[in-house]
Length: 414
Length: 102
Ligand SMILES: Cc1cc2nc3c(=O)[nH]c(=O)nc-3n(C[C@H](O)[C@H](O)[C@H](O)COP(=O)(O)OP(=O)(O)OC[C@H]3O[C@@H](n4cnc5c(N)ncnc54)[C@H](O)[C@@H]3O)c2cc1C
Image 1: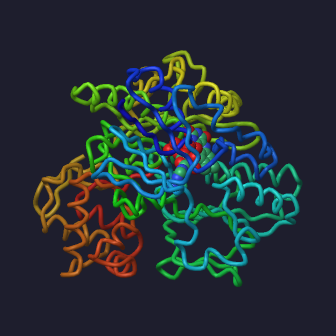
Image 2: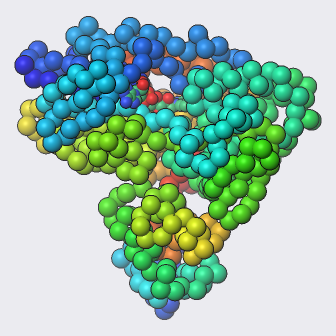
Image 3: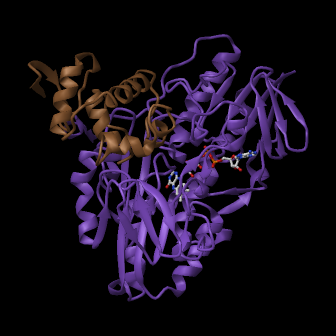
């Protein structure tokens, strides 16, 4: 009997367990570990603060999505001993493996910033990258009478890098609907040099911020937060004051990664960008948000990685050379408010492109343009997520490598 | 596009970043630094070398990473490259602008 162990049963881990259950030879055992009982549809966190989704709309039992062939172990991971091919769990169980897949994602670490945690946490300073934060922010927004809302990114990388911008657009629409938009000032505070940093995207999308009356505070690298004064300060001494701060705290990989000596300074795991093999050891592979790849940390990316990782695990166990093919393909819907969204498609080397997706030349979805169809696409993503993405089904027309047909690349050349 | 920097023809992208690190040398760095309003001193070179080394090893860069590098801390990094330290230092080091989403 040979052993394959998957750490993490979120988007990527669950998907891989389903892929592998179909392909691994019968003398392989599959075990998958997660500390949780419940799978969260994280893209849904974005809609909770505005009451579009409720908590119960975006959670389901993990076990429901794990194939029969795999054993699900609900435990916290303490440590990986890469040298001896072993995983230690909190209940003192030890799992030996021949192949390990790490898919433990990333979580927020507000304690990284001086003063961010404190009595003000989830009172005047909120996150929406956790279910708890999103639900509490919903309660706050329902009763909020107005003032200065600052939406803030602490540092890159963060998962779903467009979510803060989407949140800002949705907040603008939400306050308008409640008839208090004129009582709210909205700022977007970012460590990057603008809300959109790639030239093509800012040319196509920059106008949205102006139209919606959103002030952008660029190049702001937060050093500390003063909860009493309601002020954030950056390394150059710049200050932004707020009445309500919605921040994306530092995103870090899991703590056990650090204890196992496998991560970088944010506990992300050095990974070969084309093959998804870890740099530390040949029999450890990494997928999803847990990697240090310069690709977006998104469910769609995990999906594209999955096909290549499956192929590479099969090659690895058969002693064949790995495919060096992952191209960083990402594909994100961007909610812009008022029932509209846009769609962007890009990879390691290409900027977001205009054109259409996914059927080249035909559509139906326009890239880089606001439309109602795109919003429907975003909402339909929830169904696709539960029924196709994490269950490892092939999504028609969507391939892991970026399709260059039907897209306008000329203007993307930098 | 091409530009003449410190007497040499250098390939740049449209944001003024070198597209080929092999064309980089200290004179080129000094002139780009000047355009960014920075006079290069002994304190700058180890930072530039660190960035280039990370780039060659395909390690994505961040301000935090530089701050934990042991070469400088974040405050010193700001003091050396005021304004947008990582962006400016990357341009002077001849490596691509730090990646971000859109
Ligand atoms: C607000 C928001 C909006 C988003 N919107 C989109 C979107 O529109 N489109 C899109 O494609 N993506 C979106 N994403 C990103 C997407 O949800 C993630 O990229 C994706 O879930 C990553 O999958 P993963 O498997 O790598 O990590 P996760 O799905 O986060 O899974 C990691 C799992 O590891 C487990 N784990 C961690 N540490 C331990 C431990 N020590 N012991 C045991 N278990 C552990 C966790 O419990 C978790 O279940 C969004 C994310 C957020 C937060």
